View 1 (cartoon, one colour):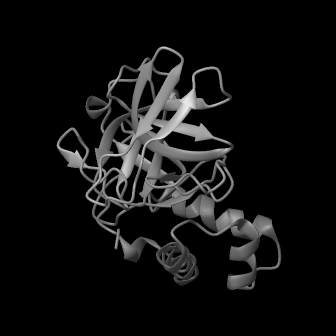
View 2: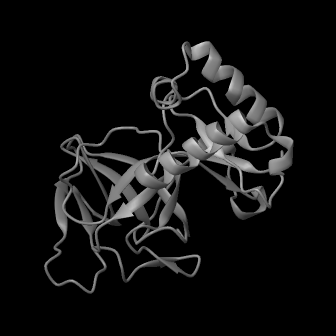
Length: 217
């Protein structure tokens, strides 16, 4: 495919790839403008439009919404694009829950039994759920979790919960006025979290699938 690109387009594409490998997310327009010494953001956009037209990248309307397409794989329009919105704390919920833009997972719709706009992905951080598996995959650090928003859940399901503004992924159990978020880990340091069912805890969604991340350390 490289013979279809101009030398300048090759430079832009390689800059995006290298930035993504170094940082785990795509560069912004401003960062590309500075790295490539392009006078205007419009000039950057022109290069991105050319790369997208030739099938080397996919762009979304989100900030940093650039995804590099594998040179060996064509872009399939039928794939579901699931946004990666941050990290799931499989440990103590210390990191403030906030939506990030870490790229888009391209997933065959036959693998996910849900509407595209009802799904998002998170990256596992920590080991409090490393003995739990979904669809045959363990919730190991670095793996992707596919989460169904506002889904019905039952005792024993894995959920993403917001506790005091911080996100955590745990098994859930309900007892009268009590909600228990409990780990499933080889690390004995992890303990359940006990919450009043009337507290401000938000169950943000149910984990419906775990996917390997070949780039995880």
